[in-house]
Image (spheres, helix red, strand yellow):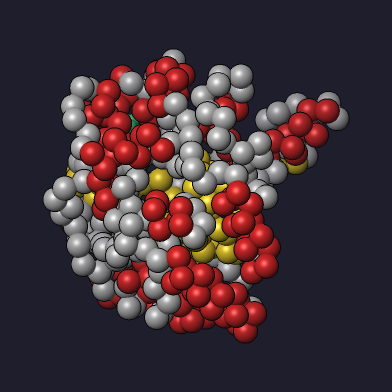
Amino acid sequence: MGRPLLDLIASARHREAMESECIGTGLTTTEEYLSYLRISRPEASIDVSGTCSARCPSCPRGNTRNMRRNGCMSADVYGRVLGKLLDEMPHLMNIEFSAWSEPFLNPELAHIVRMTEERVPCTIHTNLQHAKFLEGVIEAQPSQLVISAGGYEKSYEENHPGAFWQAFLANTELLRNLLRRHRPKTQCTLLYHVYRDNGRRDLDAMCSLAAGLGFQIYATWAYLNPYDKILDLCEGREIGGAAAKVLEKLPWSLEKSLGLSRSEARKPCLCQRIFPIINSDLSVSLCHTYYNPVIAGNFLEIPLSDLVKIRHDQEQCRRCQAYGLHRLDLEVLLRKYPASMMFYECVPGRMNSC
Ligand code: SF4
């Protein structure tokens, strides 16, 4: 029998520091300590809303014509989705709400969260533009609430057309008050997306705002989503004006990053851990980084094992992997190629937390 594991590193934020400490004390990975990255962590993504009031150019809502899926998933239908999912994936670790839409536009979100948390943790991703159902949701205690913002005051409204700074400000204050009143288990994180124009003074201001509200803040690089657009570029197709403008604002070089990700082309896909991707109309998408293709019409009518087989046969995966897009994750690339100069000078010296 092998020696028992001594340490399991479960923190994403402190993983690198903790791993360095383990190595420094002479521990051997997999024998004496293990990072959570080496453990299977299946997650699913369910779009319970299908709509959003903002039209951010970095999202298909702002850069893709003919978005097909609209309209909320009812709590009744969601209950059936959840039941099937947990029957087929008893080790599911988390459910994400949602991929390309705003969960708080679903009037039954509190009920959906309560149903979910009885069986599996969930994470809500929101722009916090809509507070009508906020108190009910906080009372339902989602495990995580991730609030996205790509700027402060002027740069916020420039990077999120259709979203309003004053609404964001008012709703963050309301959230702070609700958290004080109800004291839920919910972990709230402000996820700040860094573009070329908002990485210094605006990030500092957002850090101060987050500190005043008592929220933790995490700065990350803005991307052009969905990856359909980047695949279009790689394959020589037009991406449209809105997406092209986002590329000009990214604080990192797509060309250099693609050079690095292409050198990883033979490595496994980083995205398949999150599956299935269930849309509000019950259709199933290939993965959470692409808007297309849809690989099945109704999640409730097809066994998960068949969905996985269909996914393995996708031509799109071969095209994506040919350019290494399945490895285009800046945090992963930066860890492997720290001297790669992928980033422009506008990137703040300190990313991650303030
Ligand atoms: S290979 Fe590309 S298209 Fe296929 S699941 Fe991974 S990221 Fe998505």
